[in-house]
Length: 427
Image (cartoon, rainbow, N blue to C red; front, side):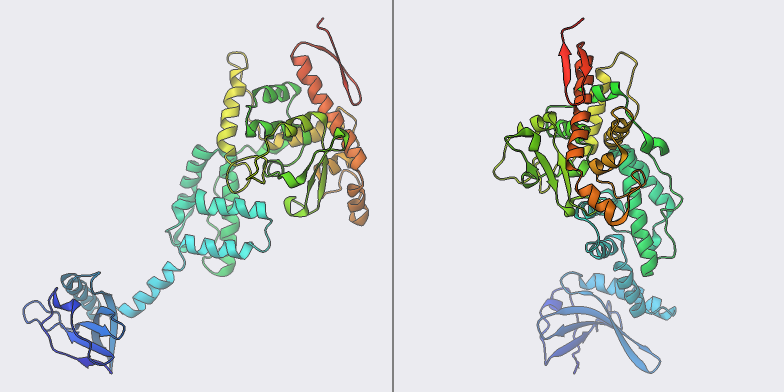
């Protein structure tokens, strides 16, 4: 039971008021400075708080306004006066506090963590990692905002900032992540609409159709730096695989053999976009790049230095673009391109220039779709799993094509063969 003890409260004695029983309440009885309705509550366990007490109808109500030691008595009196004025005007401090707690549980950071927890069971590890990076890092400026209060102008301004600092593609990808997040928020009842809808995309709409020219392949290869990123770029060109599949390559997935023709990359289903295991035959140029990478005993991944594989693509890509333009004649610049264009270019040129059959290029790229091959269902899956020899021929032919382009760029007379290139003396 509460015990009320009359006392003239001061900034000094509020810290030492004794506990009588299990719960003792001391009113602010100072005639000159005291605030009627303000109390110091001392409870078993040592907690000391400032509370206000008022009558509402037939009932006495109480609300905590601060902790002794954190808030001074003068500060407590000032806050108590404001709260009591609000009560006189018909406001309910208990309801307001409950609403504040509800609002704090719906700020962007808190809800985003709930979303990431929800998606952790159905997202592939690489997709989840990207989603976490976008919501926790790229959209950090939203963390303290209430999800229900975030509007389109706010997001549009932040997208402009992301595009400027991290690149156009990064802006669009983080935009897609945020849109999926807000769509989930609508379903959970956090808000009634998706504020991302209507914001602008930044990368060009025709970017997905970009096929690099032979000259551009040579420019990229020659400008690729002698570091992890340069190796990744060259391997993407030679293998036609997805960026993260190469950037996060582990030693366990790399199978280099004494007989170079048997060397492969073996990706488990957890590492592929379509959740199917995938074998990538390695050409001689690809083996040469991979064999030259130093083995680090303390590191599972071939590239990068952090907890995962290589990161920092945006900065490395900008540096590569500068290197490419620097090697071109004055006034000439390479058109905008992405690492994914290397994959699309290999797919297109293997079919158009090298005569590789469509179902084989699909097997090389580990595509789910069977539109080009005309195969579907169990037969499509089976065929993709058994095209190892055909995939090796396709990637050897493609590597030969790339090496031929590089040799010609150096001024050699080259005759392209089916799986080799004959280089003769300069004309």
